[in-house]
Amino acid sequence: MNSERAECGNLPLLLARLSHDLEQYQRFEFPDALNQIDQWRSALSIALPEEGVGIDQVLVELGRDVIPNGSQIPNPGCTSFITTGATTIGALATLAGSVASPQRIGVHAFNLLEEISLQWLMEMFELPPSMQGIYSSGGSVANLIALGAARQAAFERIGIDPAREGVNRPCRIYTTEASHHTILRAAAVLGMGRASVFNIATDASGCMLPEALQAQIKRDAGLEHLPVAIVANAGTTSCGAIDPLQALGRIAHAHGIWFHVDGAYGLPGILDPEVKPKYEGLQLADSVTVDPHKWLGAPVGIGATFVRDRALLHRAFTQEISDYLEGAFCDEQAKHSLDQPGYDYNDLGVELSAPSRGAVVWALIREIGKQGMAERVCRHNAMARSLAQRAHAHPNLEVVQEPTLSICCFRYVDNKHPDLNALNQRIHRQMVHNGRAMPSTAMVNGVLAIRPCFVGARTTWKHVDELIEEVVSIGQRFSA
Ligand SMILES: Cc1ncc(COP(=O)(O)O)c(C=O)c1O
Image 1 (cartoon, helix red, strand yellow):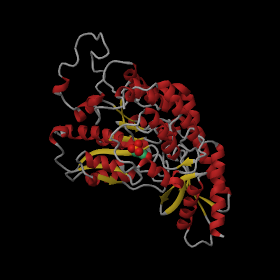
Image 2 (cartoon, helix red, strand yellow; image 1 turned 45 degrees about the horizontal axis):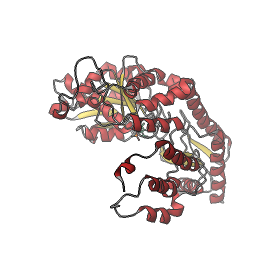
Image 3 (cartoon, protein in one colour; image 1 turned 90 degrees about the vertical axis):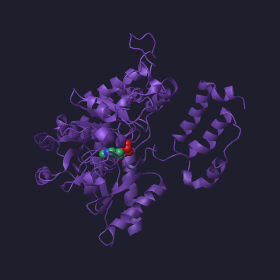
Image 4 (spheres, protein in one colour; image 1 turned 60 degrees about the horizontal axis):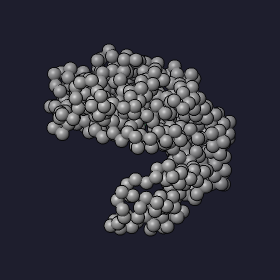
């Protein structure tokens, strides 16, 4: 194989071929991947190729064996978990970044868009204007960065630099059971240990009880534990509940404890006037996270953390001076885009090499504006509310948790059935197998609920109708 040919295909021609295959895929007319697993598994499970087949053949195999057997997540009928397919502009901007800005080094348009789009996110979601952001791969790392900042602030206050010296005493991170488990993992990775995460009591919808938090902080005052953070949710993963941010923020400020708001899923909910009052208190946050790869329609791989002081992030995460970078840039006025490193994002989080995420978020917002985003969020929230109303009105449906945002936890009920959790699990599995409406499930206060989460830009009211039809018809069949 000629190596020059292998490395440089004719991009427009090849893209046209790929886009044909992707367009076919997006119709979701293929059978689910598992139906023909033997074919694609045997086609793809070949030994390490000694010689390449060339770009044309790779495209053939992508179009024949890979793309048609891809994930169901981008299917507009899939409302599982909190994930969806990228919007078209999100996918295109990602491609543009991978071609024209494979790194964040240098002074160029993609890097400028990193700053601009972070600023836009802050404005759109009404974060304190003094905040500054950093992108990462998603909510897990975004939370890790936020808690890294919290840890830095808490230990510096007692004269210790935890980034250098490590953590020398037990810590406390106050949150609730409804928090995403990435909080536990972040505590572990940051050396505070999973045991440092203390779950405060919640109300029935999973929201932290401020008086329980207040009482626990008081109880802990005599211990050697260092209070590092209070972690609140602006949209819990299971039900989309929003913690009482105002009350929790005030407690955090009164005790000098870092206040983190995990808005990975739910921060865009502030764009819905019906829910907006629940975000009061967001201004008290020391850090906030949001995932553009959830409700905003970015391809997976984009989370954002906002803090009040990036210098703190620098102290927590700097990779320090490296020999191989010595002399690579100059201090004088730049005459070339590689004269300067550009913004030192690599010192503010846990990644050095990173894709260009700013251009993707910029493109998503530029395409439909704040208004378009608000329309999407309002539409999805309205879908969850409408689903709840229709469940209330149906004799065989029951709302398990009233929706706050775009998640509606409900279930099929039949008084004669001995085990409704098992029945709903069976209904759910059949729904997935039918492939028309594919929500996920969640255990809510001991009740197994069918849990659609509407975040997909391509998901329409038709899909809400289909979801209800599926639950009812399968439920009737299984409980007959
Ligand atoms: C509230 C919340 N935080 C964090 C995460 C983790 O996000 P990611 O999957 O992008 O790492 C999720 C994922 O659903 C979430 O719902």
